[in-house]
Structures are given as C-alpha cells and as structure tokens.
Amino acid sequence: MLSAKSLFTEILDNDDSFRLFCSIAASGESQGGWENARISALVPESERELAPKITRHGADEDKHGRIFNALMKKRGLDPVPVPPETDYTMLLERNGIGLAHDKLKADQPLTVRDIVTYLAHSRVTEQRASEQMELLRKHFADHPDLGRAVKMISNDEDNHLAYCHEELLRFAHAGHGRDIQRILRECAHAEIRVYRDVSLAVMAHMGRILGWPKARSAVLAAGIHAVYAYERAAGWRRMVSLKMPERRDALGGPATAAPEFA
View (cartoon, rainbow, N blue to C red):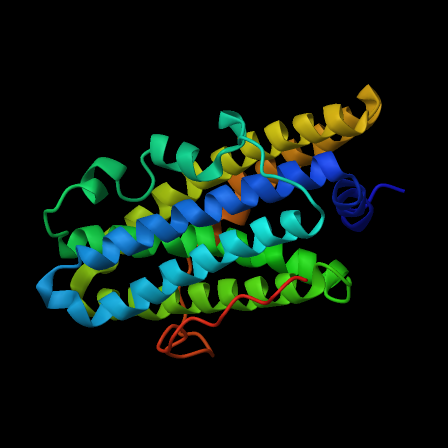
C-alpha cells in the first residue's frame, strides 16, 4: 500500500535517495539562512527592534542546513549538487516571491514595504514548511537517527510561522492590511505552483534512483496534481489567513543549538 510513511521510508532507507533528499533540504535551509541574515542587516531604522528576530530566524535556518548535512555525514555520505528543477528557494525567487537577491546583496537599507513583503512571503513558505515537518514528525519522531532532528526542526518551523502571524498583524494594525493581503494572495498562488513543480521534479529523481515502475510514478504524479488542484481551488486560503498565535514572541530568544549526531 502506497502511503506517505512508506514512501518516505523507502527514500530514507536508500543511501542515494537519502543523500539527494538531505542535499535539497540543506541547500534550501542554508539559502534561507543567508536571506534572513541579509534582511536583518538591512532593516530600516524604524524597524530595528525586529532585527534580532530576523537574525534568529536566519540562525534557525542555518542550523537546519547543518542538521541535514550532519545526517548525511553520519551515514558516510557527501552532499550532491541540487538539480535546478528541485530548488524550491531559487524557483520562488525567479517567480518574484520575496525580496530579490540583487536587493539583498546591495548595501541600501530596506523599506518598511520590503519588510512587509518579506514577512508575507515567509508566512506562506513557513506554512508549507510547518506542514511538511509535522508530517515527518508524525511518522518519524521515534526514528533512531531522524527523530531528534525532525522534532527540533518541526518546533522551529512552528515558531517561525507564529512569528510571521504576530508581526504581520502588527503591521496590519499599523495600516498595511491591504498590502499584506494582496502580497499574501500573490505569494500563495505562486508558491503552490512552484511546490507542484518541485514535487514532480523530486519524485521523478527519486523514481529513477529507486527504480520505480512507470505505473507507480504515474500514481504519485497524479496525486501531486490533485493536491495542486485542491490548493488552487481553495487550499491556498490557509496560507493567507492571519490570527494571533498561541506562541507569542516565538523568536524572542536566542536560537537553540543543533543536536550532535555521533
């Protein structure tokens, strides 16, 4: 029977597919760490109190990248180049989601509008990250090798999502509500397309590595398209709603250290 748990178990049990999975994840997290570090450095003076939280966000993402690399190292594996069609972060930027890297590489301070855009983008992508890690946590929290990593990253992603909700609501109360809702809708619709395309590309690579029959690959592709159809019709709405989170000031302290993987 094909299930999320059996699919992930097959990927994680094979060294080549595990290495690709971790390489893709580590690359995306490291890119997120760099982006947040640059945003923190360029925060406008009027929002400097937000800088430590953005720094914490970036530190968490860097930590996640180190965790995925450590998981590979523990199995004696080296990272592999990330196929461009599976690079979620790069494809989001190419679709105009978030702040352009050219802007982040410059030394000009960002505007309040830029910070609102960053937070709205993060609110959408952190929703995806939180859901994905919750799925892994559900099935692998007790896994001897992955359990600690999955639980830590899942908790961090939930913190990131809570932080985005709280800060966006603050900006909405300050008069940016219409811009926030517009940006959230644009980001959500672009993200679900990118997620569909990346999911199809990742499954195609995994299918070749694991020798999946064409029928199985077709079933998985159909499932990905079905998820996209649902998200395009209604599911995107979960990515644009805002509510005060139970976790207040979720990024108000220092980042936690990555676990050791002996």
